[in-house]
Image 1: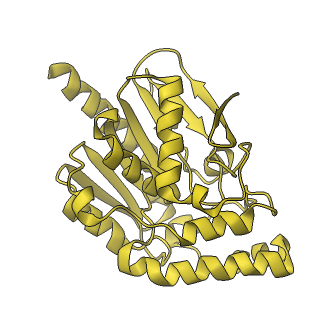
Image 2: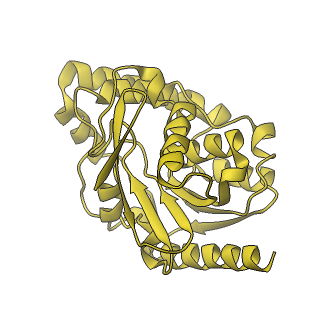
Length: 265
């Protein structure tokens, strides 16, 4: 375990491996690197001969946070990511992978600094653009619920929400954001969106999009629009738990293929 201070927060991170290209792995909203591992979303676990940087976003897991809602918007989280990369691997090109909020963070970081990334793997892309509007209302309602009724009420309601078919047998996990920060984190999520489509089209690094079906918070429409806009992208959709089980292998194959092309170039 190690830590890095940036903009009022301390980010908790670890690096596995000592040689090879660096892969940075992010997580989703209210999750953490530990919780994503429990959900089977530690996609880098099948990689060999790489260094794996995993960290908890501000306000999540073992990282500290602030009470400024703007700090939890994806452009600000992208600033955290780029600052951490400058600390851990200054000047080095890296592979980026992350679900949902991690996808939003990676896309904003890639728009800001496209040369930093050798590849992107965008996992379960979240609502964006028009579909973000109703999601904002959901996040604001969740923030109000936590403030008025406590985190237990929110967890109870969340536990009865339908899960996508690909998560049919996922274990029960706990929210990885402290109760005092959760409303702020939710309001930050409500105030953010993916980069504009024209900006996304300028990101020309090799991109793998891993999506699943049957999830209104992570709709296939977003994944398909990203695929349409990003010139070097490939999309794979999981419709059952077996689809998710294949993701680490697909990710490892994708990364090693990109590395091989870079060596030839």
